[in-house]
Length: 206
Image (cartoon, rainbow, N blue to C red; front, top):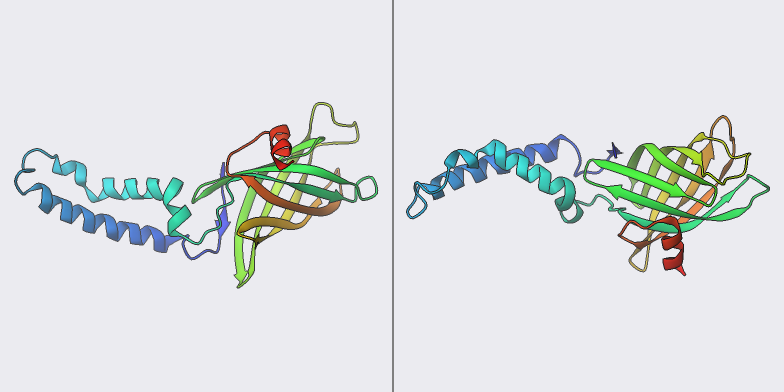
């Protein structure tokens, strides 16, 4: 997994500052508490340092807390959809995307019958109210049984994040660089928050 950028309010120095202040306050309160009977002498006060509490808060927030305590879009799971590409005259092929995301790190894999791609960088943006999306750069490699014309290449994808009946959807455009030089459109919807393989995801979609 790699780091990702975001202009979300709940990312950046302000969050670390808030956790630091909370850790100092919690440590002070706990030191007073463990000095009272019947805890006096039974709890190691050194283990309740602000630094230890701060590290624990950051760890909890990194993997779980951000999902409920921030407005950052949670894209974790398996997404199924289609890619319409200029390659071979505008064909449409099924695709499966898997997203692993924490508060600060993300990894996106997208598969078709011919190729697998992995992100090298990504960003969640909320430029304007109602304009929420995901941008990422990827490297795509052909699968073992792909056609000979399929070569390793880089590309960039921009996907808008929308909601329909409380279900998140991704849709947008992509283009590829030297060695491929194609472009197209991608539409996806999440079928589960679990990470499924290509065949299992398409089967679940049906």
